[in-house]
Length: 256
Image (cartoon, rainbow, N blue to C red):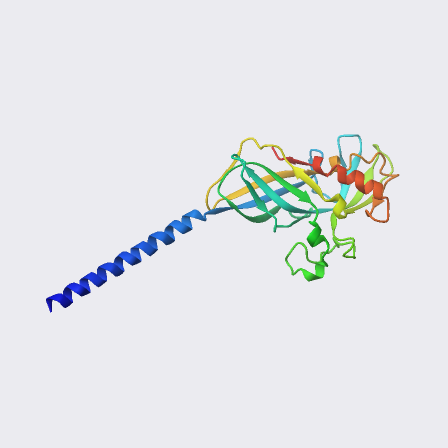
């Protein structure tokens, strides 16, 4: 009888140690996967003026005036660079920036300190060759209204869609403008400088990066709106589409 009691106590002790060991391992695994959430807060501007009235014309800093009724674009291949040089990639995340919405949840990122953000304007070549109907709502790559697709998988998505009114000079003729930029050749990369102060984010916190999207700088290369009122990249004025695309890296800056 004495032997039986001792064996039972021994068995309970071993089971308790095993349970404690498993619990300790589980806790360690959780702590190693702590993450934060990245948000982008994207402001629609013409120069220093935030666009909040679709009927207004805003000075662009170059003596011209621009009004926007539609101004939207895709962001993809988002990366964040840490102070130690480590790069965090969110290649599966897509943002469709519109005038009516400024804040976008992008995805999970490791905790730490980050220097700057990079991204592309447009849709990567693989997904650019897909039909929006194959993507389920609420994916930004799904069918949109107004359309963000050229209607053919060989042409792909409209990376940037701009519509509105512009004046070349004060009191000049108000010209309707319509610019649709796309194609793999015009998939433009953007890298912002090191932010001051450095972004630091802890577990379960939110890192929000505020960025101004300046359409005055985007359209700076257009010498005359009345002479260059439209482009659709493929059929109408492709040279103008290239000019606008070349300005994409310059249209973004941190909000101070």
